Length: 348
Image (cartoon, rainbow, N blue to C red):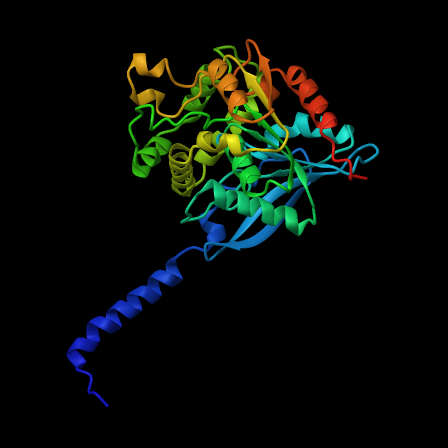
């Protein structure tokens, strides 16, 4: 047996006790997520929780599962939210689909809404698609129509690429990722820079961004919830954790464009594009000349339709980044018609 020097043992004991003290002093995961899961925010439909393990940690994905109000048509629609939102902004869309006989599933992705805000997570669209498929499999849903808005459009595209036989149809509602910003000269911003930007947010700055970027300077009281929901996170003593998740997802969006793989989509695909939209990451760090070239949805919609075989394009003149909020009737009519056209003949 090798003798242990007592002098060398003391630092090891000190380190051991320090680690033990730190472990005991560290709040639980629930405590660290205090007010980061919209605990005081009422969702429009009953909430359920899908518990699963990902990247060696336990997570909870909160979702709404709305069953048809009338005769069920045997089909399911999955609605995937954008970055600055939770699934709750699909209330009007889900209600209309339910009234038409669809089952509607609305998950909050990890890092968003009422779902887990991980302390550490490697965000990829592949990972989020795998998480979403895990939820669908747990509910024994055999196939689904996927709709994604904004960042959700990138996720829906990745889901469809990973699971083409599962995806009955794909609808992209003003998706981002239709252009590769880094290839267009937008400089890379480290995660730490996104993090600092998130820490500086206020309720006022959130509203100013949405007013300018989403609604063309024209505000309606109906838009208030989507400011208030984001602003509610700022009140959490653990907001830094939420800010870090948001920074990581910005990096995911910037570095993982789907534009190069659009020709691989073989399922029926519908593009619904508000023509006024000019959303693009990095517009704030390029000059005016370069900025004018980014986020031109009037052009991007057409290019995307050309890239996706046999896809359909609905152009909504005068509408911005959120057609389902700003002009619901103009959005839902072509969408429901598309779903009817591409109904699964095997659905009961």
